[in-house]
Amino acid sequence: MVLANILRTAAHAHRPLSHDSELVQAIALLAPDHQDATWPRTRAWNEARSLPREYSPTFLAAFTGRKGKIRSYRCP
Image (cartoon, rainbow, N blue to C red; front, side, top):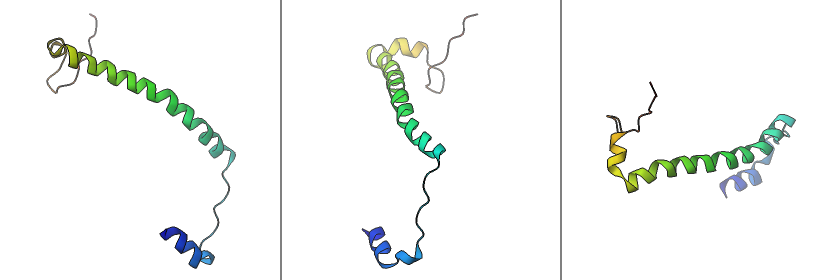
């Protein structure tokens, strides 16, 4: 509401926005696809981390480091 009032009363003090370049348009087109690809992966990772915590806390304790984060296991 405030922005609309500013533009209504002082439109002469503001310049119009320039049009987006082709690169900006391409990024705007690809960004939702990137989000759609990232969100399921993040959701699956979070679910994989929460399931052991919910169903087997003792198993999770065997793989938890001092700071409470799951340690990675490296084969010798």
